[in-house]
Amino acid sequence: MLDHLLNEFLVTGEMDAVWLTAAQQLALADQERAKVFNITEDNVAQVILERSHLLKSVFPTVNQFCQKNLSISTLSMLQLLWDLWLPWATKMAVSRESLGRAFIQGILGVQGTGKTTMCQILSIIFEYFNYKTLSLSLDDLYKTYSDRQALQKQDPRLIWRGPPGTHDINLGLSVLTQIRQGESSVTVPQFDKSAYAGAGDRTTPKIVTDIDIVLFEGWFVGVVPIDPQLFDSAPPPIITAADRLFAREMNEQLQTYLPLWERLDSLIVLDPQDYHYSFAWRKQAEQKMIAAGKSGMNDAQIEEFVNYFWRSLHPELFIPSLLQSSQVEFVVKVNHDHSFTRIYTNK
Image (cartoon, rainbow, N blue to C red; front, side):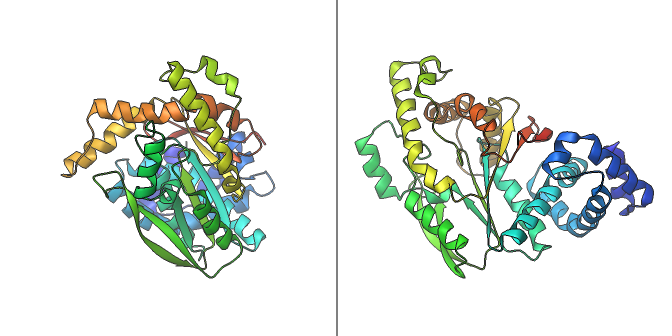
């Protein structure tokens, strides 16, 4: 039914009364999603009318961006836009208005779930709300190359950047605190992953002014420590006693990130149907880089890379308990092709 409605929009560019009525019925039919986006029988007509106006405004720009950067069909993109990106952006805009200050949205998703792309599209949508957006990645908060070299000498297990302990938490706290307090001009760090043959280092920071929405994304944004006993029966690749010791120590390191998570106004989770999708998604990304003439990892290197991250914070251990907590506003279940099956909340 939704495919038919969206196809009709693509052909005609219009939504008549019949179209709007059908869209209302569909919005109420998915009760989980209706709850997330505060849609009721009393307000559904107004919600769908406002979303349809926003769709007509943003579709040309979002479509152009997706055709250039994403390998998904226009219809698939349109469904994501209608069912997720537009209502979520509207929800954040309402929160920003009620707060009277910048709204800080945390976005948690394992490698390949599409966090960066989603932030780019949301930023396009927010332009139509006349809101200035800052996309901030946990990666932007990495310690400098020299600091991480020193850290690796202390702990040779930290062979790559990424796990807890490799970030400058005080830097992140400073940035988010300044934005929450309404500082008109804030210096935001940036990280160049290509520096030092891929080891990465800080690069020239950027100055942002009068930010309304912060989209703070990362592979363990919002993740909190779990019961250490869970590591006694941890899933692969946490196999050896040394693996379990490393995982426990990374779990302890998460304590130092809690003040950073407290700066979030909301946390949403992009939750894959199967966490092993990360391997396929990473392979696709590396193949794309190689096709563009850049250096990329082979399949064996990708497996080693992903397993390294899973040894530090395994998604099967950390994510399920987080999804049941009150910290998470809502969850998006992500399919292998980056479409979604559910949008739900436990609140």
